Length: 156
Image 1 (tube, helix red, strand yellow):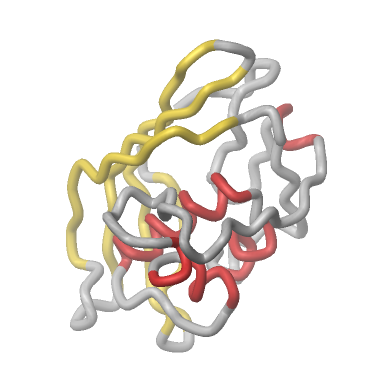
Image 2 (cartoon, helix red, strand yellow; image 1 turned 90 degrees about the vertical axis):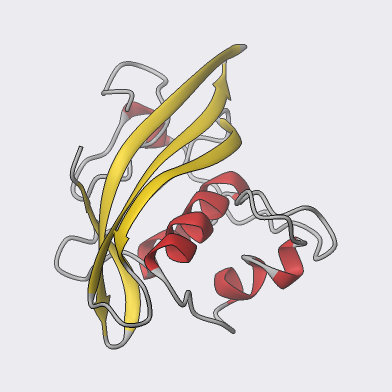
């Protein structure tokens, strides 16, 4: 995961703010028929769009991870904050519009199903910034709050 060097992608670690997160950006929702940026072979309106709009909830920790990645890709800071565990949620989150998220690979999961209260998702998120390709790799922990999956922290 890129550390706090100038112009790095925003970190998803609770309580940390990277220099890249200094520019506010509002949601630029995708058209419902666009490919969903989360990496699943589905249209945004049938995949992460309803989660971002608040009309559906992620059924697993992996789906929440995918929807949070898609929220970074479309600039939906409000969704990222809504899906962050209350005890560690930062007061605000500003995303850098210069970061273009280009792909997500799920490398592994533990727990996180409809039958679990906790889970982890290891992923690699690819991005482009200032003409350079980069990646953020993380193993994230998720728990249920009020029956809904939320992001807690990066374990690695």
